[in-house]
Picture 1 (cartoon, rainbow, N blue to C red):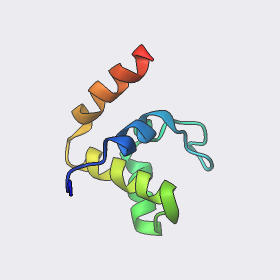
Picture 2 (picture 1 turned 120 degrees about the horizontal axis):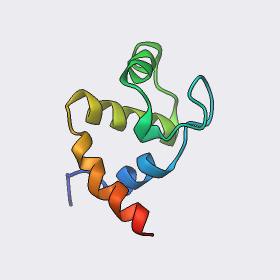
Picture 3 (picture 1 turned 90 degrees about the vertical axis):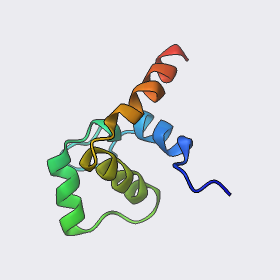
Length: 78
């Protein structure tokens, strides 16, 4: 079993938009760290959205946004 990152979640983060709130309509990958930190303090939403927000938070917190470059490039080709 692969314990690494699920590439599908990276695609979702780069294609799905925030469904509500101050940044409604913003790609999840483009949400500012300050907003993600607010969710960490208040509690992440349940389910898939919470998992996506937590994932992009960890990516940004750890300086791993370069992981999204090939995903975004691939999506542009589609």
